[in-house]
Length: 528
Image 1 (cartoon, rainbow, N blue to C red):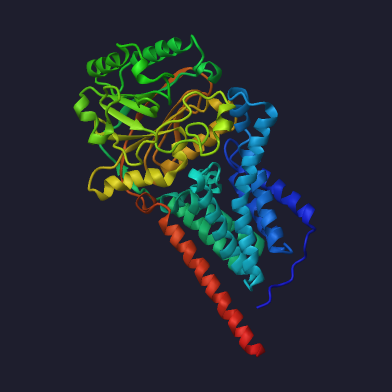
Image 2: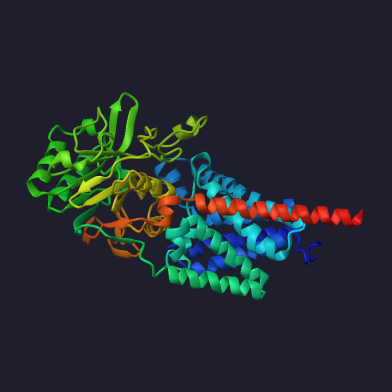
């Protein structure tokens, strides 16, 4: 089979168009949320790749598109590196551009591979409806785990309010990205097959959005989510720590609730250095009022061994931790403990060979110890609350694995998810609504509510369908009080994670390759 000859664009204008399309794609994410724009910009990329003269040019187009996407979507890292990390502005800019450059390599590989298949006989339909959408999804999945992963603003997150949201409980965020790429291929192909496929996908998404995968469990609990609004430049400043201790003491104990939660590292000092009466005071408050308290604080288990942790205090400490590993010794006495397991490179652990770079920045507590992936939830009356800390809620497959582990063991998985964050590192930027959108996707995938207690925003209650039920204004000191219903049951994504879509992607690529081999062999036989 000889592919149809398509008009080519000169390399330089094509690269500029790809980069512009990628930059425009960031508008499909929060805060604007123009999710339909993503179909158009991905379609522009696929059209350019189809017309690329060589595999190398197709790869460069993929790189340019992703570079524009990442640079436009994560520019706020400059604030953490320069304003709070102390790097000179030019180094901070270079670091962000370097990250965008490296992230672009994933899309470069996928678009180059698609053009390579086209050169070996893949038809337009196979290229646009099979090869490019599958390869796009695989590139985002690899970006999500290679070198610990950086899955911020992968394409599926744009669709928390779109026609594809109903697919989240089945295929997760990467599967939604695949479907978005498939619809982009339909736009480029523009024939009856493509139109029928697009209608089918959209109709299925709208139908699936009406399905309830999980059911209420027990009675609703009252929650109080604290937002201290401590400016990042003051969080670790000498003389300000005591002010933070006093403020959170007052906020935590001013009113009883079934669950009171603080942001990540709300108390900016190691737990064993707190005043001797501080943690006992929280236990006394919990016992006296019937409240459960989850406190974000770093915990040391020995010299040069400290974790980014959550400590839990319950009215009856023996009932709060339902697994022996929930409160590992020799940390401070508490009913419950959760340690962050997916750490941020450069901010929470030092990658090999990068100590020189970390030393240039003013980031305290920058080399944490990893917690275990599978940790117990925190029992709050009828509910099981599973914490995750800041960046961890980007990894939906890990949250799903924690839920599935309990399910397959015949136990009740967590009924409520809780994210404790401090993203004041990024100022009042699009990072805040982007992170809220990420948490919403976790609720869609698992069919469980997600609570968010953050330092500067976005503190919110997200229901089991991914809708924001309540939230605080950003950059204000306040407490969000709400009633939250926990959910039980399972979703296909919770039990299978990314494995089903990866298996399907591998099967489609294998079938495509075998079909091209047969066509090539048949053609060679005829010429002989």
